[in-house]
Amino acid sequence: MNEGPNNGTDTYDYHLKTYGKDLVYDDFIRNFTASAWDPKEWVDLFADAGANYFVQVSKHHDGYTLFDLPENVTKRTSVALSPHRNLVKELFDASKKYQPHLHRAVYYSLPEWFHPDYKKYGFSIWPGGNATNPFINESLPYTGYVPLTDYVTDKIVPEMDTLAEMGTEIMWCDIGGPNRTTEFASAWFNKAAEQNRQVVMNARCGLPGDFDTPEYARYNGVQVRKWESNLGMDPFSYGYNRATPLASYLNASSIVTSLIDIISKNGNFLLDVGPTANGTIVDIEQQHLRQAGLWIKSHAEAIFNTTYWFVTPEEGENIRFTISPDAFYIHSLVKPSSTLTLSSPIPWVDGDSVTVVGGKMHGTVVPVHRLNNGSIALIVSKEVSAGDQYAWVFKIPY
Image (tube, rainbow, N blue to C red):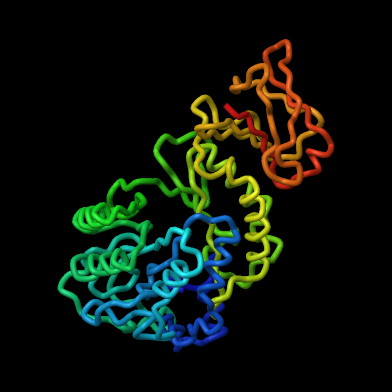
């Protein structure tokens, strides 16, 4: 809205027409009820999707936290304000009870767009200082604001400490900027070590962290340093956008093939689902996630606890490779024809038995022979081609 009229998003014009000049951003807080939200349904969906971890937004740039905090830190929370619920804790509790294998994590924005006490640290589009009503050019109050001596010391640190105490296993920060992450992280890591727990943080907390996070992007080649590609099922937004056509949401085939491409290059795949205002995940997203999850679970041995092949992650446009301590895996991102020919020096020798992984033909032996030019040819029957969808995986056991 602050970009004014006639900008690319039409937000200013839409808001003025729909809500008028006197309704401002913080007035929408009271409309956030999470009335249909069931945390068990969410963690069950994540498990059905084949995920091993989830990253819940705890606070975005607007400074509204979805967890509880002491009143001397802020009252701009989902507990002090509508819907008067500690949403992060409820989700973590549901995960512990119903899907304990899921690793629990949080996204956390260090700066806030318009926190009054961030003004001395402000930069770029995170200027700090009170927001302005763009229609009448008047300064706006910051709902739930508690005056602080220092934003970094008195807000960032206690918020991150609170999330650590809640049991987050990944601190997925955003934006960076002024911070005291060194002090926070040393205490967090040491306590986790004492409890024999593993915790990690991304590269956006103000330190190099443990992994990089390309956004709506991925690397074309292997990265020896661990990384994680993140994007939304909505091609335009991490949040729910009612203007997005249902056909535009990422489908199961794209989820599966993206996952394979990313893991073949030493990456993880963080896929965002944007819930509606009442706390539900739209049906088309649930369908696609569960469809992808069936494939992922059927092919888990070629996905989880694998890593990249140091020779090359891929051959051509549609072949990817992963390895485990016990086997070499060949992934075809398109339905293979009668012969799948590979020129890469894959670890196959005469006598090795190549089998199908997952799908209706799981365990089926695939005939293989070496061509005169040294390439390997896998003979793929019609039954094997028809026995799977999204991607086809073949295993060479060591």
